[in-house]
Length: 486
Image (cartoon, rainbow, N blue to C red; front, side, top):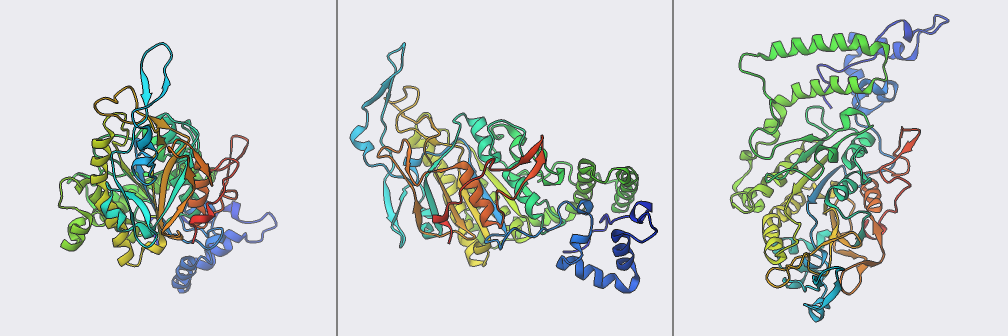
């Protein structure tokens, strides 16, 4: 990994010399590595990680770190279907609902409003060598079904959008905890010094339930926070300086700022917030060149554009984000999250889910196929999930004209593909109406533990001391979903 112009090295000062006059370890390594004859050797040793352990940990919070064990995936692309897709209308067919269609479930006290069972308006068919059933709204994903491991028995702890989104992203229902992506970066660091380690691509139609707290670092080092990139227009607001500011002026300003900050940092080397700000300033400087190139999808061939559906008005927004994700993974970005809004179908699920399927089907299938043909899929983990599932009945008495479905935390569907995943697998089962997970039941904490495991991290060992105890993404721990691990 190329050495940054602004890399902060351990300083040689009186604190690095022991009281008995002997030279301290840090001073010894710094002096040994700073000689002109050893510059090349030192850089090679740092690249191989030999000297990394000897440097202060605060030297670069995003420096690559060794995993707990051999990883199956080097990067993760998390496709967040905001609003919560319905399991029985996507990847968990429930033919029994046809018999119950239109029949009452319960009477709501104090009114004549009823909840009535709703059959899926979509046809299912079996695809691939695995013979896995897929909804008709995903014809392109159906062609990739042998790459997917589908989890039909996932459940979560809350069923309000904002708290459930927090829970899926952070393992907690209230804001203030680090996100999954931040934990991954904290545990593994970054493979690219010139791009953010953790990137978030929002939906063009609006924000995310709960906002930036979903990709927050919280109490983890500031450098692990997700970087929001606009999928249209300038990827980062004010990324490029005004025309009157030269690169040399920027370098001089940043060098002076670092000198002033380092004086303060010398008195408190554990000031991670200051160190994070220093690193972010340096990263922003380097990103002025690397981000525009990384996101320049105009460089892609006509065949690639067609594969993702980039020239179709319906698929273009998601296609652009998926293609940007592939380009950033190629360049060493560790964790990406892509949001697609509009899955909250309380009314007219037939139209709304069909529309959402049309928007994401080709781009997501294109992403899988593109990664496969480039030899990247085996090292890239893809996760597709919402914040919870849907009920088997209509929501809010919209049955007569355009029935929809309500929120359901007891059953939801998720699929994974790529690095370390056993494709063509279906795990778990819900009851005959899809209301509750009943077989091989797994919780959100288990999904998080599995994602970390595939990236070489043990969720019980990935801890950070905060608030009087060691914190984890999975709180008291999660079970790995071994059935989907190749």
